[in-house]
Amino acid sequence: MLRQFLIIIAAGTLLACSPHAENAGQLESRLAEVDAAHPDMAGLAVWIEGAEAGASAGAAFGNAAPDGRALDAQTPVRIASNTKTYVAAAYLRLWESGLAPLDDPIEGLIDPAFNAILAEDGYRTDLITPRHLLMHNSGMPDHADEAYVAAVFEDTQRQWTRAHQVELLTVNHDPLGPPGEAFVYSDTGYVLLGHIIERITGETLAAAVRRLLRFDTVGLDQTWWEQVEQPGAAIAPRAHQYLGEIDATGFNGSMDLYGGGGLIASPRDMARFWRGLFRGEVFDDPATLSVMLDAPGQVAPERYRLGVFVEEIGGVTAYSHSGFWGTYSVYVPELDIAIAAVTLDQSDFGTMRTLVHDLVGEYPSQ
Image (cartoon, rainbow, N blue to C red; front, top):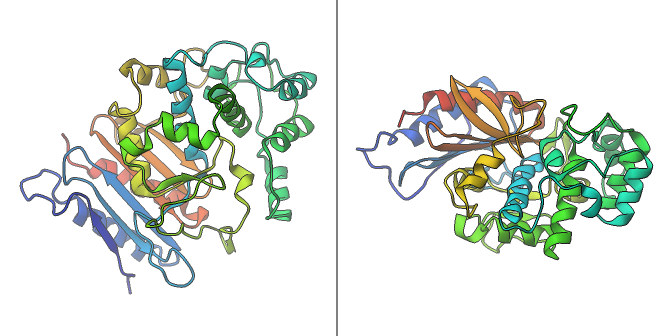
């Protein structure tokens, strides 16, 4: 028997005359198909942020917690690396305001202690720039490797610091080569970007991102930074998230807190952020979005720009990002829609991603 679905329709009842009026029903139907084909899935939630009033809708199935609390598309989760898009956008807000460089060496932007640790291990902080960090082509590998994951599992309550993570990079990895020569996804690069944002603004990363990205204006009231901020009293508790049989909900959030991850958000808020970003609600200058979607010197422009992946879905260009725990956000300019999805078990990410791609292909043309 199919589990009960929770359907949420934005802005009241969808207008029958709207070309998007069947969104909610189609979304419910598509999730019902996934549930029927994968009855062991812990839970799945999707939000579509549409182009016109009443066109947005969310649907979900499964339990947000072992006590039977239902999952819905406004239930917050750890979004992990989806955070990188927010951090990149926050950095670009500083850049467009003349407060942060894109192409200056990071040696003058990071704490001298961090600079010494990196430089002593051969990292060319005199050549690496914020743009390199944003594009993952700094020559810097990822501290969050298999050894790091093993250490997290060994002591799930350890309080990690940014310094721990930078030091781990140098202990476990040598530079891959000069900046600009290879695309290698690096959480450490975004940990450093978060650090630079704090040094420039004098604020915590959480406060800076919230202010720079205009959370209140965009309507991100189901988004907050773990350990640093507290959710509003009316916000549902975050959902449990799993790695197979392991409930990782209680793992100390500092394992992924400093810019590579750290945000907790609902699918609704993720979709709102992505559409707001592309619709001019975040940047002051529309040209800043063009900078974010450009990648001069990127050796993998077909994959990654500044804080966003680029992909083709059903013959149209889409921008996206995903997160370790099973989160995925997509914006499709041709359709002017954002879709955000969450699967509660990381192992179901592929199924969820396929669903999102199918939804893009089924969405009515503008």
